[in-house]
Image 1: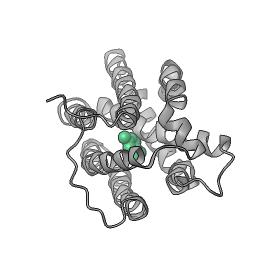
Image 2 (image 1 turned 120 degrees about the horizontal axis):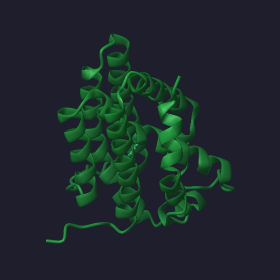
Image 3 (image 1 turned 45 degrees about the horizontal axis):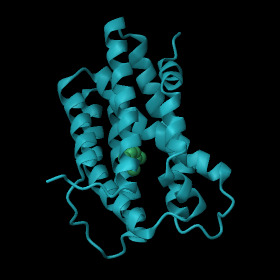
Image 4 (image 1 turned 90 degrees about the vertical axis):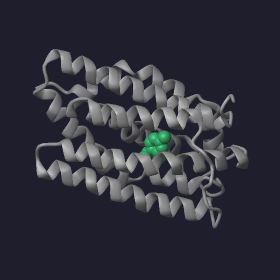
Length: 217
Ligand SMILES: Cc1ncc(CO)c(N)n1
């Protein structure tokens, strides 16, 4: 039995390591991330998540087993709850009127294109890093931070480092591994590419937030 995720996770290890050393993450962890940068991130993430939940629903529709469809629909509903909770904390009454940044647009458009136009296997591989990278980064921060009592971003950290999120991440991995088991070599290569690209886009999303990326014109 192959474990597709373990293999692709090893192949993309260097991207995960680069994310851990991004300034956004090191400053989020020690609580020194400038408020305006975090605000920019949360606004862009709200825009990202409102597209991502539609994308998850669509990947669920493409799955064969109704339990798989149900999982993705539940994950999409979970996002709505997380969004509301985090945004109540960090956005207060401030409504998001921001336009998606170039990277936010690129990431959501990429995912949407793969899920709509390519195979279910590729779609599953493309949406997976959103689960697995946030889980690994959440756990990494929880494990290494020394300021849990007074980090202004602790609610964010706890959301992604917690057990509830872990259960959902493991389920997404299991479903994708199951599809990979029946996939031919060509499909597996396409799955690897989609996973890698979405991982690169995760790196870019944090980088674009740290630099408060604007449209060039
Ligand atoms: C960009 C991005 N990727 C993944 C997650 C986790 O759901 C998130 N909130 N934002």
